[in-house]
Image (cartoon, rainbow, N blue to C red):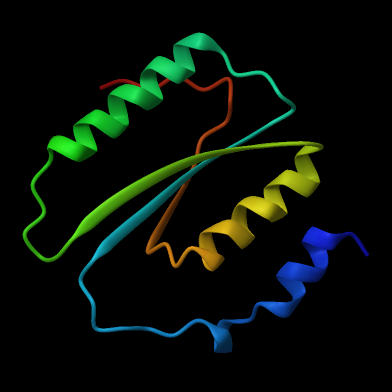
Length: 102
């Protein structure tokens, strides 16, 4: 069993505690084989800027972006493990070849 699979198998729903916090902790992961399309990078930067400018009165808000490189099945498992480990309330998965509007 690969390391990422062992990590995920150790994490269960029972380990995840619901809190009363209204904080918004977004983790954006970009699984890839090592190359990002430049237009996707610009779209991602624009999205993060809009998030930073947006208003959220219910608590604190944070956004983190990480890119993980490797074989896609292994990297996808690592993305989920990262979201759980970092305590993300929301996980957005963006493929390295995606583009999206503002």
